[in-house]
Length: 369
Ligand SMILES: Cc1cc2nc3c(=O)[nH]c(=O)nc-3n(C[C@H](O)[C@H](O)[C@H](O)COP(=O)(O)OP(=O)(O)OC[C@H]3O[C@@H](n4cnc5c(N)ncnc54)[C@H](O)[C@@H]3O)c2cc1C
Image (cartoon, rainbow, N blue to C red; front, side, top):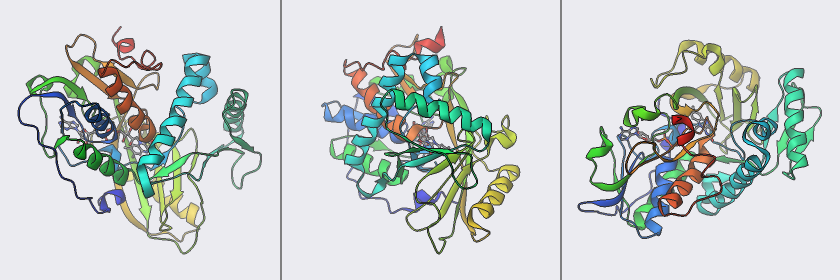
């Protein structure tokens, strides 16, 4: 079955045409590649994007549609691990990135907030620590002490829900208008063979073979999602997620329930870039869907997708160590909707010699040491 998001009508696009050598060739036409392409073309560079599938047909059209602020780690843990200033800068930057996405997205993004739920008392303690750290640093959030069937929640007031394929296809249309040439269904085997001054690898969990130097730093992981037929009423008015994000669900504007996760049912099997569904995880999703809907929901769509985890849960954004003129932006650890858009811009800016305060935090060199 096709991902629900990809059934959206594909907008008309007049492709830019670039004969011969370009300033930047980008591999990957997901949110990262399209965001970077737009930014580079707006700065006047000649850009060509290659994808072995169509635009947004990788993880950017196969995800859960959550558009959350923050990194993949909890904020209190991030402060201890990455440092207080770095974490504050990272969280603030994701909030600004969401604001920027909202300006571009039209009806592809809504911001109803999200609920980060505690599934048991232990998780309640950890999300309470996160809430206190956020509150201390002035990141608005509400604590909900009692939440039906759960053990408390953080309400992130300005989080969003995105139709990711619609958003990315719109980005591609803008990029094409700015002169970017898209070559879809065009697999790249060797970045050195591209006719370009510089190459940006934007393949998140799919393209490890292109940069073998970072193969140990980018761990592909599989996620599985199901979507139901429309329900007759609204049960969930914003994205919900629990158990460290292992379970996540939301109700879409047409009242379908989307839910995903349960990677921990067979966590080692899910560390793969083989994009296929598995009976054990699908069975867990079916059971949970039935629970969430009171038995009312019938599944209309199911799919798998691949994303990339990193050891420190921070992306790799910048020049690939030891390579001349090859750059990367990848490894969002399951938070690529906002981080991918932001890192596409950030890597484009770095290629234009405009360094961001987070450039050193995301530097791929930290993994190659
Ligand atoms: C099931 C699932 C649920 C998720 N849920 C969420 C969520 O709710 N919120 C969130 O923020 N994030 C979520 N993520 C993560 C998020 O989807 C990704 O991190 C993000 O889409 C990555 O975007 P990207 O553009 O970097 O990569 P992708 O969108 O994966 O694009 C990479 C592209 O590179 C192309 N490619 C790869 N190799 C080659 C090659 N050799 N030659 C040419 N092209 C190539 C692929 O075809 C693909 O189109 C989820 C991911 C999955 C799989």
